Each structure stands twice: as structure tokens, then as C-alpha cells.
Image (cartoon, rainbow, N blue to C red):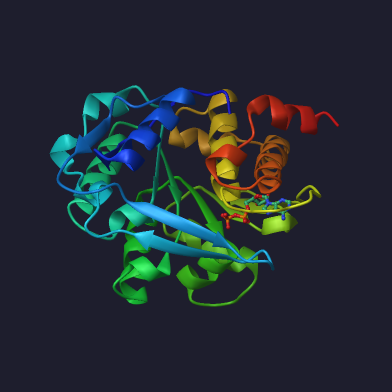
Length: 278
Ligand code: ADP
């Protein structure tokens, strides 16, 4: 999306690990905080796409390298350079990855960084849904910005009330800004001051893998571009700015759906801007 980013994590010294490292570097993602190990193989997620467009995830998880990242392996000075620390809940399932993730998040929070969370619930990976819900609550209490799908929202709140009610419950847990992705419907955003829904754009969708990630990348990059560098500023964002950010992010998500795969399908900032101008 034209911003600068870095990745913190652990890969196995195997073909998939080398592939990931190379792919990040080719896309100008800073990989200095990536740790390589011979102790375990690189974690994998296979996504199968059925004829009706539904997806199925199959994981190679245990034992795998990413969950072996330890708190001591996280170079805190590295996070010092960032404005936003983004994390997901898949890294919270097993130790020591869980402690490593919270170590980074808690340090960044105390240093005044903006914390962004993608709930990204992968039910099959959790020992129980109760454990997943509990951990998501903890993660939410540390986040300023949250991205959830409608299904995740219902799971977290445990009810099927209006989207406004449900997002209010998320705000009550700590975050100041909640994005709900609505597939082809676009997104809904809620802050303590306003709520708005922004329609998606019509595309010929072939594979939605990566759409949520493209959406989040677009949101975070635009927020930094408009000058957000302190969580306290979240409440100063106007409704019209938020609508512009949502439109930009909806286009980033929609364009990702027009191609197969995850990483190869991600649009560039120029792609999104071109569509925005149409
Ligand atoms: P997640 O991967 O988080 O479940 P979604 O599938 O809702 O996310 O997609 C993220 C964003 O991508 C949506 O909010 C929307 O902007 C865009 N998007 C997803 N699917 C489509 C689609 N079929 N047509 C147009 N835009 C889409």
C-alpha cells in the first residue's frame, strides 16, 4: 500500500521459510526481525476453493516454527521505529508464541504505539471455543483498532443483536475504532462518536482469500498517512475522513477478490487509487 512495514515472526529453515522470506523482501517488507530456526518447520495454511466459492482451510501447525517465537527473541528497539503494531489471534493459541506476542503488544502499548488487532478466528486451531473467546477478550482489551467479520462479531458478543449493539460491546472492551468487514457488502465502522456503513464496490470475485488482509493494510496505511501516530488521536478522525478510508479499503479488498491466491492477488496503492478515481 506504499507504506513501510516490517514482519516479526519465526520461520523454519526450509523451502517454505525461504519462500516467505524472499516474498517479503521482494515486496519491500523489512525482515530484520524474522528469526529462522532448524527446530521446527514453517507453519502452513492451505486454502482450498470450492466451485461455489466457499473456502476451506487446512493447517500444518504443530510443531511449527511461528509458535516457537519467544519473548526474548523480539527485538524491542525494532518496534520503537513503528507507529502501529498489528497482530492476530492465531499467534495467541500456544506458548511461547502467545507470551512473545503479548510481550510485543504490551511493550508497544506502553510506548504509546497504536495497537491494531485482526480477530481472524480460526476455530480448528483452538483447543476449545471457550478458550478462543477468552483469549480474544484479552487481545481486545489491549487493542486500539480492531477488524472483525460479522461472524466473529457474533461469536465474541455471544448474541445476534444489531451491528450497532454488537460493536458497542467491542468498544466497551477497550478499542476506540472497530471495522466490521461485510464481504461484497463493504464495511461498517464504529467509533465512540459515530457509526457508518460504506458500500463495497462491484467486482467479478473469483477468490476472496487475502481480502480482509488487504482491507486492513489499506486502513492502517491511510490512517498513518493522515497523520495518526498516537492512539489518543483516534477520536479526532472525522466522519468524512473515515468514509474516505473505508472506500479506499473496500477497493483494496475488492481488487484482491478478482485474482486467485493471497499474496499474488494483493493490489498496489496505484491500483486502488486508479479505481478510486473512476
Ligand atoms: P474477511 O477476510 O475479513 O472475512 P471479507 O471477506 O469481508 O473479509 O473482505 C474484506 C473486504 O474486502 C470487505 O470488507 C470488502 O470491502 C471487500 N470484499 C470482500 N469480498 C468482496 C466481494 N465479493 N466483492 C467486493 N468486495 C469484496
